[in-house]
Length: 416
Image (tube, rainbow, N blue to C red; front, side):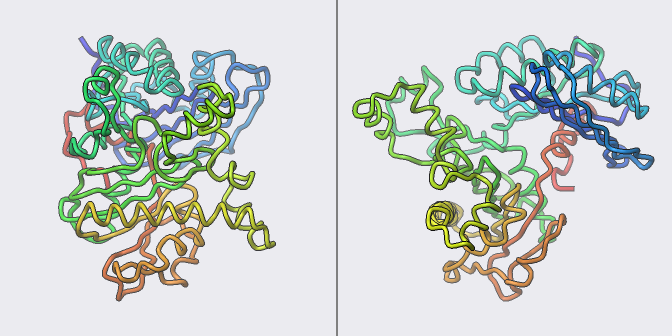
């Protein structure tokens, strides 16, 4: 029998477990307030770092310390200790559930799911297609379960939002028996962000999500695009892994698959060598040595040609996906930028839309230059297609989906 939340409990702890880090937020879904946020990084090292920020109405000072945090169990205990100092501990009866970000849910998990032994076993079976992420997510679930076995542990999957893609968009054109036997297909990632941002964009336009077609550009160190028709994803740029698609901080995005064979035969590179090249030594850092867009722009202003080329390659790929997803959707109501680069790099937004006036796209220079943490339109009034900046909030989306599940309300509005 699965644990159940207390009827009066309204708080959700959101955990994002990485291979050597643990990010968290505590939210009260009763009044929508954030009570705390923090990070434990360099887990397993002597100089682990614990950063805790109280966020409630009576919030105290941010706390930061360095100590040895041996493993994820110790990391979550450190989180519990920090929360207890603020009177919002992990043992609180007001805690309704723990929501976990899980990167890969395959085809089985299209919605948030209360974790059972069977669910955990399926997440483990997906490790071969998410070897860097799912093991850490599993560790976070097991650790939280051990500390609060009476609480529902809810998995919210990065891939879930993309399970609505039609089969012709999800399939690679390879032998179907081989593909099916090894789960080779396009899954997509960043789905929690794409779900939140597309729904929030509809609200910004004062329209129901079911009426709106949106191209979402999630541009961080990892980057992805999605085509969302009436609230449902119909295509996305990432594929079997997060490597496919846009140019990213250290990932190549789209390349000819034969590059792998060429480097193997002619450069003597092993599979692991090519994997490291495409995932860690490519993208912006491969083109110019930097993956920070602010530094790239600084170098461009100083006349650096490598930085200019990296920027131009990055923007060219963005334009290709905007055009492709415009064709997929047929009608576009908004193009929206989100995540670190999307929310803060005005030059990227302007360059990505420049020259697309015939598609109804334009950016107002004054509106685009404004720095704000609020969702906003940056297109001129005459533009047929809205261009927007919508800060993503994956933690809030995970908390909403988790709370809706344990309360039995699956119709909650993701964009509220």
